[in-house]
Image 1 (cartoon, rainbow, N blue to C red):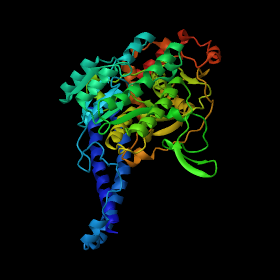
Image 2: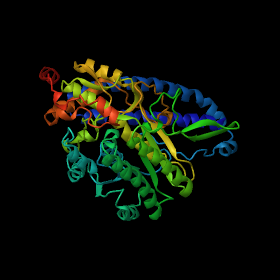
Image 3: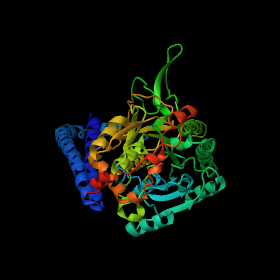
Length: 517
């Protein structure tokens, strides 16, 4: 009984620490926000969170006070107490944004693909938390901007300028190495031997489903880059003799599960099944990719399973939802740290595209009926989830750890309606360039991250203003001709979309002036 009460009290203490660190994080965010209007809206959201935390705090304190008599009785038998206190898990529990409760130290983290939309804010967040960060990137995403003739809406600085600015603003160092993970295998092995990272975070993959379906060339590139990169990473860790110490954290996608209506909640990676003969088993969830990009993530998942089984590599695979937002408390510290913002039909994520279109007075481009249900997560939570995964690696020999990295699910047309009401633009339903179900339900489990301390940011029209303010600031960089879809899943879809005219997209001056006001 004493072990139970002490565990309860310890958990209460950890929650108290988390309340404090979360409060400090929010204060820091408010103090660094560049827009007073954004501060006000963000403060409203944070106030609601604080009310919830206050209620939890009251419950925690009351529970701890109620436990004190039992604790006093339990401590009267020290021999029994010691006999009952054993470690029952290999997972360390960390307080958000602080030191490990078990005294573990900060880590050396190598971020592959650290120049990208998710990789850059994650690198800054990890550095801000005290980790030693090394960014590895071949700048391929910038090269694709040139290929597509569409730059980031935000003017992103060179990697050299970015890391110099971070040092100037925070006094913290981030090392940048220009290296192609899919091609420069020997250089990757050498780098791993020299740096000996505790964790490698793997973002270095072509991340856009539409781009992966654009042409035979982009299909082949996506397969070659993504699958070879994943395999090279595992081989390099083995050749560098780091299999005992290095943990891989891979950013995957919810798309590995497919977007059909499954008839129930999608579990986190593994599913209970009954095999022929009535045998029960817990197996990797069946893959059902909807694009070449999603297929590479499914192939990655099989590689992780093999290298864990064969070489006992410690691997965490994060099945992430659609990311929205652009800046984080770290990227708004200086103009040179700003994150990229993609609005085009190939790389722009659906909510960010809607918010950009609404701010520019362009009717929202909803594909098909808009009945597709998708999972979403804010870019700030992407960085937080990565650190939680870093701090909670599977033990050597344990199967691949899989988290569903999502905050909530929403139907696309419902999100379009929210944005339309906020910005005053129309909703335009256009032919769907994708080969997918017109309507689907999506129920997703995300308890693992929540149990480890994540309090996810949900879709809030107040926070939508973060994105619209970015659009207003850089609207002169927008090319309206890049808004409509330019990649099609097959010939039939291309024919159905043939009448879409990129030149027909015009920016509504009246709405633009209304947004500016």
